[in-house]
Image (cartoon, rainbow, N blue to C red; front, side, top):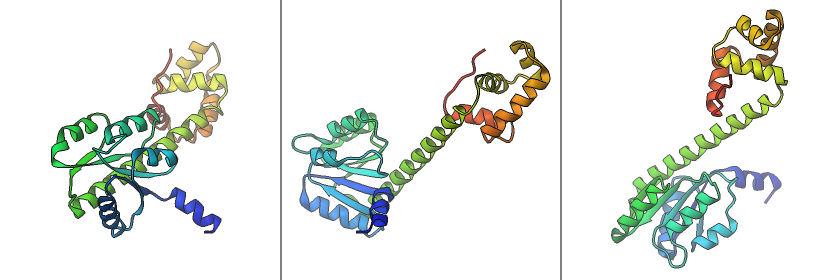
Length: 214
């Protein structure tokens, strides 16, 4: 495998299937391969956790009831690890209560065994899309936070007042400086933040959950 192939392998979305039943693993793998997904299978939760890398995009298809660590405990472990991997639970009829409990603590869906192929493919596609969107949002938030670090202390103060809806003259009075100085700082900080207008700044601050400080 070339270095490029290795990079692609770790950046392409992967469906991780965890089930102690070899026949189920094989069936689910084939269902998902036919939809063009990359699939990796594991016979236990511990086996999966041993190689789990939160940087890898994808989703998890997991049995609820397994010997040793069950699906609920695996989900709790992933939550503790702060993973963003969406989890689709597979359950036998008698495990519905457990599956509902799994959804309450973070699973995105549960399907009864044997899973209908089309339903499974659709739910997996939705889980992968959810993971992709979350990663895109996280990357954008990280970029915004990085851009904030390029601002001077005074530019950061001006930014906070601008986002709060205050005009340059008002900001100048609050900060004890001139109107022209604030205007220059506004132009500079908007350039650094790559914002075209105040609305862009407001949206950026909302994305990273920052509130203005008076």
